[in-house]
Image (cartoon, rainbow, N blue to C red):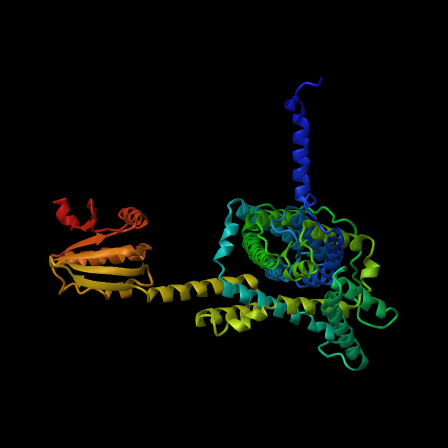
Length: 548
């Protein structure tokens, strides 16, 4: 007869099973995954990444491979380690624009600096930015993205949609000129772009077996075989004689002076890269959360973005962050797991190493049509319906953030501006809500029952509620329906009670909440708070008299 099972003898097996489960969970392989959808969606994203990465690399004057390497590394690392499965990262315009300023400062500080040396400074900047992003994740600062109001989100998304849409128009001009295509060339470009958009729009209505974006690219590419049309190779995203052909990203340890001058020069740009990257990534994460009905992990995404940027700096990449356009392509195709992002990264590397000649023949019309559809899908059309339902201040914030995003292409500045404007609007509205109900009881004591928050914005209105000269000798200020919020409020209380004391009148502060009491207690070490605690409520006394 077999004895009882000794569970301790299976401990190594159970530990190994748990370890394998965690490993598979990392790639979302232990969950139900539609492998066909994930792989095909990843392939579509890889095709869309190529012209974008090239174009963003050319903004500061880098080689196309610098952008492509960054796209590969960012997409791979964040897909594996990130806090939002299905989100795509890569080289972005928001980060590329920052390097323009860095390069100008380098040329000013070091006249005659070689392009190769400039790249090493850029790589060092990306590495430091990555370290800052990891620190932000470890300090759990990702939660502060919750402070971004919904109107700002609307404005950010709409502005980004306009940027994506407008960025496609150079493809409708003669190469290297400001002249619009004409005749057959223009009609061909418009027709192929329209066909791409029609396939992307119409195919899902018949079948969702294959991503419509991929089908559109393949169909349009097949139609133009042998025709003289603009391709990735000859478009404005590529310079004469350049190619996307390369090998595995080469190791590139920044060869720059490691001294205070170097640190002081690149640190501000690294901080901007880190901030812009995190803002754009976390906002994209929130958007994808809404689309998929799931919740990503912001702090984990911060660490993943930082890790990816560090590796990008050491592997000849220009750094980057999350890409809302490619993320929407991915999620609209049905991808929900990490496998799609990993596939996109691997396929992008395959294109670079083995398929460059084929990818360079893709018609730009197909990619332009794809990005047009991304722009249309990105724009929050529902925001127009909210104009009459939203407060006027929110509508103004949304419009301004949209315009700033579209005009400056600086997403971080637009979002920060929107947050500050929303905060000021909120403060102004709350400042008007301070109220005081007054009555005199049977003992001749006057009561002021305060309603609404007492903070810097409402201090003036608060002071106007009191009639110190005509009030009786004893006054109670009741804070049961109010809160003392900040130092300005404490100073206002201090001055008010002091004025009552100078008139020889006694003031009681009643029903202060525990947090208000703590705030007043802490403030007493900084400013003179004319009060001591009474068992029932706070009794205002003259500190001079108390000292006697």
